[in-house]
Image (cartoon, rainbow, N blue to C red):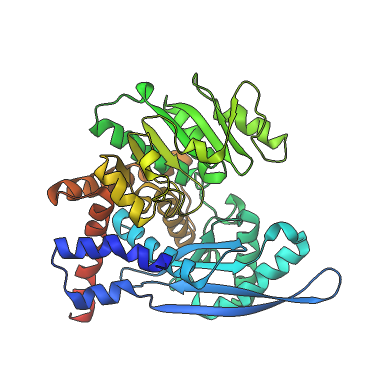
Length: 412
């Protein structure tokens, strides 16, 4: 089964529960447009490498496509199609006027010089420029892409259009029209979802323990936002392995240590070294996978000791693991809800770019929390109403919104 096929499973379950018109299900299940491009790049030594890039626009029923661009050696069309589908779902759950999109380039950016990376980035935008735009499809950062890469993308697209076009890209630096509060938005949203889940289980934040797999942008901000709310973090991991401290880890100090040690947390003083896989198996109230997809599978799902899981990463749990976790009574807040804070604040950035009027960070944080609390309640209530998981509940909310728009727009 491909990743894209796996992603359809909860939607199919949701469709049955709400008796969705099969014709509408077919439309929602397939991307509107996929593009594969070849990007020739002159390397520093003079030879030319040709890289493969992708962009998938899953839906524009509710508004323009929206979704990140990742630079990674394992990028594939199947992956970007899946991530675009999840983004459509995520935006519908959050109540945003967007469809979903996703893009990527097959490359290990660590092997490129800064100049080569810039030429690759600009080359990618040159090739996908006909299918993106502030009212068509709006890229953003993802794995191995950041504000600098977004700046190159914005500049290249603006050159092509002959005028400054900040609304075409989100996740930009503030000086280029980025939004205050964007960098921390996904992690902050994950903790909003965590607190809402704990509230439903009558667990006070100060009484809860959590383990976080991943200490990149999302994982580190999730950890810092968790600490700010009084949650005790007992385990963290990154590509170098994991660390454990029953008394609690201070993510701010861990981040300082990592900055001084090649960006890695391995060897953090005072903590016990554990493997990255062991972080997933800690006996905690909440496990937060914040790394890459397919981390919780049928191979380790029966070993999970956490009472609840909040998915910060995209697709960290496969379909078979979902069944096992449900049977074991482990509640899962799905990625399409939990990590929606990033696209929510990307939406705020886009709105500010269109109006050329910018908000304070307090306004951004307050508006994000309001939208995420509402989205969580909608999904939680749908799951209870239909006696199903929160993942299926999320799809019930999403496809209900998309289906209604399709009926009105297309007369289906």
